[in-house]
Amino acid sequence: MIKGQRGPEYLTEYPKYESITETVTETGNVVTSARVDVYSTTTGVVDELLVSNRDVVSAGDPLFSAKSTATQQEKNTARSNYLTAKSTLDAAKATAYSLQATMFDTWDEFKNLAESGTYEKDDGTPKNENRTLPAFIISQNEWLAAEAHYKNQQQKIAQAQAQTNAMWEAYQATQDSTVYATIEGTIYNVSIAETDAVQVRSTTAQPVLVIADLSKTRVAVQLNEVDIPKVSVGQNATIEIDAIPAKEYKGIVDAVDTIGQNVEGVVTYNVYISLSDPEPGIKPGMTARVNIVVAEKENTLTVSSSAVRPHEGGRAVQVVNPQTKELEFIPVEIGLRGNGRTEIVSGIDEHTEIIQALTNEQVDRPSGGFFGG
Image (tube, rainbow, N blue to C red; front, side, top):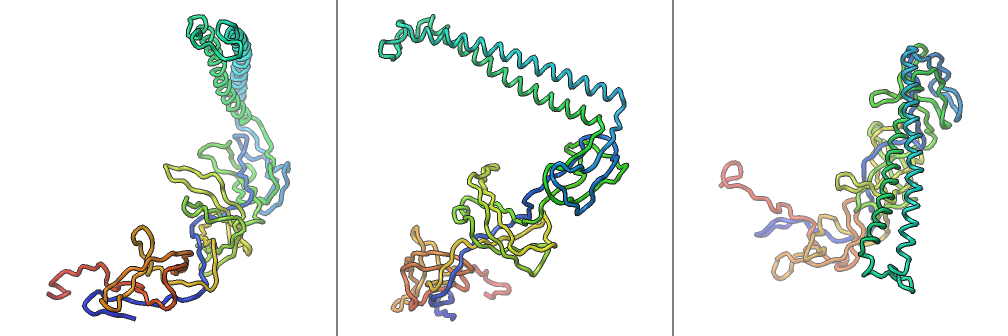
Protein backbone atom coordinates (compact mmCIF):
# COMPACT_ATOMS: atom_id res chain seq x y z
CA MET A 1 0.00 0.00 0.00
CA ILE A 2 1.02 3.64 -0.36
CA LYS A 3 1.34 5.98 2.59
CA GLY A 4 2.50 9.54 2.69
CA GLN A 5 1.70 12.02 5.39
CA ARG A 6 4.19 14.86 5.49
CA GLY A 7 7.08 12.74 4.35
CA PRO A 8 8.25 10.59 1.48
CA GLU A 9 5.65 8.16 0.17
CA TYR A 10 6.49 4.52 0.58
CA LEU A 11 5.29 1.04 -0.24
CA THR A 12 4.96 -1.51 2.56
CA GLU A 13 4.75 -5.29 2.66
CA TYR A 14 4.68 -8.19 5.06
CA PRO A 15 7.31 -10.92 4.89
CA LYS A 16 5.97 -14.24 3.63
CA TYR A 17 6.96 -17.88 3.62
CA GLU A 18 7.74 -19.26 0.17
CA SER A 19 10.34 -21.12 -1.86
CA ILE A 20 13.44 -19.20 -2.97
CA THR A 21 16.06 -20.06 -5.55
CA GLU A 22 19.45 -18.39 -5.81
CA THR A 23 21.07 -18.40 -9.24
CA VAL A 24 24.31 -17.30 -10.84
CA THR A 25 23.75 -15.77 -14.27
CA GLU A 26 26.36 -15.30 -17.00
CA THR A 27 26.59 -15.14 -20.78
CA GLY A 28 28.82 -17.56 -22.70
CA ASN A 29 29.02 -19.57 -25.91
CA VAL A 30 28.06 -23.00 -27.16
CA VAL A 31 31.16 -25.21 -27.50
CA THR A 32 31.88 -28.73 -28.71
CA SER A 33 33.36 -31.48 -26.61
CA ALA A 34 36.00 -32.19 -29.29
CA ARG A 35 37.05 -30.09 -32.26
CA VAL A 36 40.07 -29.95 -34.55
CA ASP A 37 40.60 -27.33 -37.25
CA VAL A 38 42.35 -29.00 -40.19
CA TYR A 39 44.86 -27.16 -42.38
CA SER A 40 46.90 -28.21 -45.37
CA THR A 41 50.50 -29.19 -44.70
CA THR A 42 51.43 -28.26 -48.28
CA THR A 43 51.27 -24.98 -50.17
CA GLY A 44 49.79 -25.97 -53.49
CA VAL A 45 46.51 -27.29 -54.89
CA VAL A 46 44.08 -29.97 -53.74
CA ASP A 47 44.85 -33.14 -55.64
CA GLU A 48 42.10 -35.35 -54.21
CA LEU A 49 39.31 -34.60 -51.70
CA LEU A 50 38.33 -37.77 -49.87
CA VAL A 51 35.59 -36.52 -47.50
CA SER A 52 32.41 -34.46 -47.55
CA ASN A 53 30.40 -32.56 -44.95
CA ARG A 54 28.70 -34.88 -42.41
CA ASP A 55 31.07 -37.78 -43.13
CA VAL A 56 32.13 -39.64 -39.99
CA VAL A 57 35.87 -40.33 -39.77
CA SER A 58 38.22 -42.10 -37.38
CA ALA A 59 41.70 -41.05 -36.34
CA GLY A 60 44.11 -41.94 -39.14
CA ASP A 61 41.58 -41.73 -41.98
CA PRO A 62 42.84 -39.77 -45.04
CA LEU A 63 41.03 -36.48 -45.62
CA PHE A 64 42.63 -34.94 -48.71
CA SER A 65 45.88 -34.82 -50.63
CA ALA A 66 47.65 -31.74 -51.91
CA LYS A 67 50.20 -31.30 -54.69
CA SER A 68 52.95 -28.78 -54.09
CA THR A 69 53.34 -25.87 -56.47
CA ALA A 70 56.89 -25.13 -55.29
CA THR A 71 59.64 -25.03 -57.92
CA GLN A 72 62.63 -27.36 -57.65
CA GLN A 73 64.79 -24.45 -56.60
CA GLU A 74 62.34 -23.57 -53.80
CA LYS A 75 62.37 -27.19 -52.66
CA ASN A 76 66.17 -27.28 -52.65
CA THR A 77 66.38 -24.01 -50.70
CA ALA A 78 63.86 -25.22 -48.12
CA ARG A 79 65.78 -28.47 -47.64
CA SER A 80 69.09 -26.60 -47.32
CA ASN A 81 67.60 -24.27 -44.69
CA TYR A 82 66.34 -27.24 -42.73
CA LEU A 83 69.71 -29.04 -42.84
CA THR A 84 71.49 -25.86 -41.72
CA ALA A 85 69.10 -25.46 -38.79
CA LYS A 86 69.51 -29.15 -37.90
CA SER A 87 73.31 -28.77 -37.94
CA THR A 88 73.08 -25.75 -35.63
CA LEU A 89 70.89 -27.74 -33.26
CA ASP A 90 73.28 -30.69 -33.19
CA ALA A 91 76.22 -28.37 -32.50
CA ALA A 92 74.32 -26.69 -29.66
CA LYS A 93 73.62 -30.10 -28.10
CA ALA A 94 77.27 -31.12 -28.42
CA THR A 95 78.37 -27.92 -26.69
CA ALA A 96 75.87 -28.62 -23.92
CA TYR A 97 77.48 -32.01 -23.25
CA SER A 98 80.86 -30.34 -22.87
CA LEU A 99 79.48 -27.60 -20.62
CA GLN A 100 77.67 -30.18 -18.50
CA ALA A 101 80.92 -32.12 -17.98
CA THR A 102 82.70 -28.92 -16.97
CA MET A 103 79.88 -28.07 -14.57
CA PHE A 104 80.13 -31.48 -12.89
CA ASP A 105 83.94 -31.20 -12.61
CA THR A 106 83.79 -27.76 -11.01
CA TRP A 107 81.03 -28.95 -8.68
CA ASP A 108 83.15 -31.89 -7.52
CA GLU A 109 86.11 -29.61 -6.93
CA PHE A 110 84.03 -27.11 -5.00
CA LYS A 111 82.26 -29.83 -2.99
CA ASN A 112 85.55 -31.45 -1.98
CA LEU A 113 86.98 -28.08 -0.99
CA ALA A 114 83.86 -27.06 0.96
CA GLU A 115 83.86 -30.37 2.89
CA SER A 116 87.55 -30.13 3.82
CA GLY A 117 88.61 -29.38 7.36
CA THR A 118 89.44 -25.82 6.43
CA TYR A 119 85.85 -24.95 5.58
CA GLU A 120 83.73 -27.50 7.47
CA LYS A 121 83.61 -28.61 11.10
CA ASP A 122 83.64 -32.24 12.22
CA ASP A 123 79.86 -32.16 12.78
CA GLY A 124 79.26 -31.09 9.16
CA THR A 125 78.42 -27.46 9.87
CA PRO A 126 80.26 -24.79 7.86
CA LYS A 127 83.16 -22.72 9.16
CA ASN A 128 81.66 -19.46 8.02
CA GLU A 129 84.66 -17.41 9.08
CA ASN A 130 86.82 -19.29 6.52
CA ARG A 131 84.27 -19.36 3.73
CA THR A 132 85.01 -15.74 2.96
CA LEU A 133 88.61 -16.61 1.99
CA PRO A 134 89.58 -16.08 -1.68
CA ALA A 135 90.23 -19.79 -2.36
CA PHE A 136 86.69 -20.72 -1.30
CA ILE A 137 85.03 -17.82 -3.13
CA ILE A 138 86.96 -18.54 -6.37
CA SER A 139 86.03 -22.24 -6.33
CA GLN A 140 82.41 -21.43 -5.62
CA ASN A 141 82.24 -18.83 -8.40
CA GLU A 142 83.85 -21.21 -10.90
CA TRP A 143 81.13 -23.76 -10.17
CA LEU A 144 78.34 -21.14 -10.37
CA ALA A 145 79.74 -19.80 -13.65
CA ALA A 146 79.91 -23.32 -15.12
CA GLU A 147 76.33 -23.94 -14.05
CA ALA A 148 75.20 -20.63 -15.61
CA HIS A 149 76.95 -21.47 -18.90
CA TYR A 150 75.22 -24.85 -19.02
CA LYS A 151 71.77 -23.37 -18.31
CA ASN A 152 72.34 -20.67 -20.93
CA GLN A 153 73.21 -23.36 -23.45
CA GLN A 154 69.88 -25.07 -22.73
CA GLN A 155 68.16 -21.88 -23.86
CA LYS A 156 70.21 -21.89 -27.05
CA ILE A 157 69.18 -25.50 -27.68
CA ALA A 158 65.51 -24.57 -27.24
CA GLN A 159 65.89 -21.73 -29.74
CA ALA A 160 67.72 -23.98 -32.20
CA GLN A 161 65.03 -26.64 -31.83
CA ALA A 162 62.29 -24.11 -32.56
CA GLN A 163 64.17 -22.92 -35.65
CA THR A 164 64.69 -26.49 -36.81
CA ASN A 165 60.99 -27.25 -36.42
CA ALA A 166 60.07 -24.15 -38.40
CA MET A 167 62.49 -25.03 -41.19
CA TRP A 168 61.16 -28.60 -41.29
CA GLU A 169 57.59 -27.35 -41.65
CA ALA A 170 58.70 -24.95 -44.38
CA TYR A 171 60.39 -27.83 -46.19
CA GLN A 172 57.32 -30.05 -45.83
CA ALA A 173 55.20 -27.26 -47.31
CA THR A 174 57.10 -27.76 -50.58
CA GLN A 175 56.31 -31.50 -50.71
CA ASP A 176 53.22 -33.34 -51.88
CA SER A 177 51.28 -34.60 -48.88
CA THR A 178 48.17 -36.37 -47.61
CA VAL A 179 46.40 -34.99 -44.54
CA TYR A 180 44.91 -37.48 -42.06
CA ALA A 181 42.30 -37.15 -39.32
CA THR A 182 43.76 -36.87 -35.83
CA ILE A 183 40.51 -37.54 -33.92
CA GLU A 184 37.24 -39.38 -34.42
CA GLY A 185 34.32 -37.17 -35.36
CA THR A 186 32.17 -35.69 -38.09
CA ILE A 187 33.37 -33.53 -40.97
CA TYR A 188 32.04 -29.95 -41.07
CA ASN A 189 32.79 -26.69 -42.89
CA VAL A 190 34.57 -28.18 -45.89
CA SER A 191 35.82 -25.14 -47.79
CA ILE A 192 37.91 -26.80 -50.52
CA ALA A 193 37.35 -28.67 -53.75
CA GLU A 194 39.74 -30.49 -56.02
CA THR A 195 42.19 -28.13 -57.81
CA ASP A 196 41.57 -25.39 -55.18
CA ALA A 197 44.66 -23.61 -53.89
CA VAL A 198 45.64 -24.30 -50.28
CA GLN A 199 48.35 -23.02 -47.97
CA VAL A 200 49.90 -24.15 -44.73
CA ARG A 201 48.65 -22.88 -41.38
CA SER A 202 49.43 -19.23 -40.67
CA THR A 203 47.93 -16.22 -38.94
CA THR A 204 45.85 -15.49 -42.06
CA ALA A 205 45.06 -19.01 -43.31
CA GLN A 206 41.59 -20.42 -42.66
CA PRO A 207 41.03 -24.12 -41.84
CA VAL A 208 40.01 -26.15 -44.89
CA LEU A 209 37.65 -28.27 -42.80
CA VAL A 210 36.71 -29.05 -39.22
CA ILE A 211 36.39 -32.37 -37.40
CA ALA A 212 34.10 -32.21 -34.39
CA ASP A 213 32.06 -34.37 -32.06
CA LEU A 214 28.73 -32.63 -31.52
CA SER A 215 27.17 -35.50 -29.58
CA LYS A 216 27.74 -33.59 -26.34
CA THR A 217 26.67 -29.96 -26.55
CA ARG A 218 28.02 -27.68 -23.83
CA VAL A 219 28.00 -24.01 -22.95
CA ALA A 220 31.15 -22.39 -21.58
CA VAL A 221 30.93 -19.34 -19.32
CA GLN A 222 33.49 -17.41 -17.30
CA LEU A 223 32.61 -16.58 -13.70
CA ASN A 224 34.24 -14.07 -11.39
CA GLU A 225 35.82 -14.62 -7.97
CA VAL A 226 32.56 -13.77 -6.16
CA ASP A 227 30.35 -16.27 -7.99
CA ILE A 228 32.72 -19.21 -8.53
CA PRO A 229 32.63 -20.49 -4.89
CA LYS A 230 28.87 -20.98 -5.23
CA VAL A 231 29.11 -23.21 -8.32
CA SER A 232 29.85 -26.93 -8.29
CA VAL A 233 29.53 -29.94 -10.57
CA GLY A 234 26.03 -31.41 -10.71
CA GLN A 235 24.08 -28.19 -10.23
CA ASN A 236 21.07 -27.64 -12.50
CA ALA A 237 20.93 -24.78 -14.96
CA THR A 238 18.69 -23.25 -17.59
CA ILE A 239 20.04 -21.98 -20.90
CA GLU A 240 18.65 -19.47 -23.36
CA ILE A 241 20.17 -19.28 -26.86
CA ASP A 242 20.06 -15.83 -28.48
CA ALA A 243 19.59 -17.33 -31.93
CA ILE A 244 16.63 -19.45 -30.75
CA PRO A 245 14.24 -17.02 -29.02
CA ALA A 246 11.39 -17.93 -26.67
CA LYS A 247 12.89 -21.30 -25.78
CA GLU A 248 14.63 -22.48 -22.64
CA TYR A 249 16.90 -25.53 -22.37
CA LYS A 250 17.92 -27.57 -19.35
CA GLY A 251 21.52 -28.22 -18.40
CA ILE A 252 23.85 -29.56 -15.72
CA VAL A 253 27.22 -28.18 -14.61
CA ASP A 254 29.75 -30.86 -15.54
CA ALA A 255 33.11 -29.06 -15.09
CA VAL A 256 34.41 -26.16 -13.00
CA ASP A 257 37.94 -24.77 -13.26
CA THR A 258 40.04 -24.83 -10.10
CA ILE A 259 42.71 -22.43 -11.37
CA GLY A 260 41.59 -19.02 -12.58
CA GLN A 261 42.81 -16.96 -15.51
CA ASN A 262 44.18 -13.52 -14.71
CA VAL A 263 43.67 -11.08 -17.58
CA GLU A 264 44.69 -7.50 -16.81
CA GLY A 265 44.00 -8.01 -13.11
CA VAL A 266 40.59 -9.65 -13.58
CA VAL A 267 40.43 -13.29 -12.50
CA THR A 268 37.83 -15.56 -14.09
CA TYR A 269 37.09 -19.29 -13.97
CA ASN A 270 35.69 -21.45 -16.77
CA VAL A 271 32.48 -23.36 -16.08
CA TYR A 272 30.98 -25.86 -18.53
CA ILE A 273 27.29 -26.76 -18.65
CA SER A 274 26.03 -29.78 -20.61
CA LEU A 275 22.67 -29.38 -22.33
CA SER A 276 20.23 -32.14 -21.35
CA ASP A 277 17.93 -31.52 -24.32
CA PRO A 278 20.02 -30.22 -27.26
CA GLU A 279 18.63 -29.97 -30.76
CA PRO A 280 20.17 -29.62 -34.25
CA GLY A 281 19.52 -25.86 -34.36
CA ILE A 282 22.05 -25.25 -31.59
CA LYS A 283 25.43 -24.70 -33.20
CA PRO A 284 28.93 -24.14 -31.77
CA GLY A 285 29.76 -20.49 -31.24
CA MET A 286 26.20 -19.34 -30.54
CA THR A 287 25.72 -16.92 -27.66
CA ALA A 288 23.94 -18.39 -24.64
CA ARG A 289 22.68 -16.98 -21.35
CA VAL A 290 23.03 -19.41 -18.45
CA ASN A 291 21.26 -19.41 -15.09
CA ILE A 292 22.90 -21.85 -12.66
CA VAL A 293 20.84 -22.85 -9.63
CA VAL A 294 23.33 -22.64 -6.75
CA ALA A 295 20.92 -22.95 -3.78
CA GLU A 296 17.22 -23.59 -3.05
CA LYS A 297 15.01 -23.49 0.03
CA GLU A 298 11.32 -24.19 0.58
CA ASN A 299 8.94 -22.54 3.03
CA THR A 300 11.39 -19.93 4.23
CA LEU A 301 10.71 -16.31 5.25
CA THR A 302 11.39 -13.84 2.42
CA VAL A 303 10.97 -10.16 1.58
CA SER A 304 11.44 -8.10 -1.55
CA SER A 305 15.15 -7.54 -2.14
CA SER A 306 14.49 -3.81 -2.43
CA ALA A 307 13.44 -3.81 1.24
CA VAL A 308 16.87 -4.94 2.45
CA ARG A 309 19.37 -2.13 2.87
CA PRO A 310 22.99 -1.74 4.05
CA HIS A 311 23.07 -0.57 7.67
CA GLU A 312 25.99 -0.22 10.10
CA GLY A 313 28.12 -2.82 8.35
CA GLY A 314 25.27 -5.30 8.01
CA ARG A 315 21.78 -5.49 6.55
CA ALA A 316 18.50 -4.05 7.83
CA VAL A 317 14.88 -3.36 6.89
CA GLN A 318 12.94 -0.22 7.63
CA VAL A 319 9.67 0.05 9.56
CA VAL A 320 7.42 2.91 10.65
CA ASN A 321 7.56 3.65 14.36
CA PRO A 322 3.88 3.60 15.44
CA GLN A 323 4.41 6.41 18.00
CA THR A 324 6.67 8.83 16.13
CA LYS A 325 5.64 7.82 12.59
CA GLU A 326 9.32 8.01 11.72
CA LEU A 327 11.20 5.36 9.75
CA GLU A 328 13.49 3.10 11.79
CA PHE A 329 15.97 0.37 10.90
CA ILE A 330 15.72 -3.22 12.18
CA PRO A 331 18.90 -5.25 11.66
CA VAL A 332 18.32 -8.61 9.95
CA GLU A 333 20.38 -11.63 8.98
CA ILE A 334 19.86 -12.60 5.36
CA GLY A 335 20.31 -15.88 3.50
CA LEU A 336 19.59 -16.72 -0.13
CA ARG A 337 18.80 -14.10 -2.74
CA GLY A 338 17.03 -14.75 -6.02
CA ASN A 339 14.21 -13.69 -8.31
CA GLY A 340 13.85 -10.34 -6.56
CA ARG A 341 13.41 -11.94 -3.13
CA THR A 342 15.78 -12.22 -0.16
CA GLU A 343 15.61 -14.80 2.62
CA ILE A 344 15.38 -13.44 6.17
CA VAL A 345 17.11 -15.75 8.64
CA SER A 346 16.45 -13.65 11.74
CA GLY A 347 15.43 -10.17 12.89
CA ILE A 348 11.76 -9.97 11.88
CA ASP A 349 8.78 -12.29 11.42
CA GLU A 350 5.81 -12.50 9.07
CA HIS A 351 3.84 -10.02 11.19
CA THR A 352 6.34 -7.18 10.76
CA GLU A 353 5.14 -4.56 8.29
CA ILE A 354 8.24 -3.28 6.52
CA ILE A 355 9.02 -0.62 3.95
CA GLN A 356 9.43 -2.20 0.55
CA ALA A 357 10.60 1.00 -1.15
CA LEU A 358 10.30 4.77 -0.98
CA THR A 359 8.35 5.86 -4.04
CA ASN A 360 10.10 9.23 -4.38
CA GLU A 361 13.34 8.49 -2.60
CA GLN A 362 16.27 10.81 -3.35
CA VAL A 363 14.39 12.69 -6.06
CA ASP A 364 15.21 16.40 -6.17
CA ARG A 365 12.53 18.24 -8.09
CA PRO A 366 13.48 21.72 -9.36
CA SER A 367 11.18 24.62 -8.61
CA GLY A 368 9.36 26.35 -11.41
CA GLY A 369 8.83 25.01 -14.93
CA PHE A 370 6.61 22.01 -15.30
CA PHE A 371 6.88 21.14 -11.60
CA GLY A 372 5.40 24.42 -10.40
CA GLY A 373 6.83 26.88 -8.01
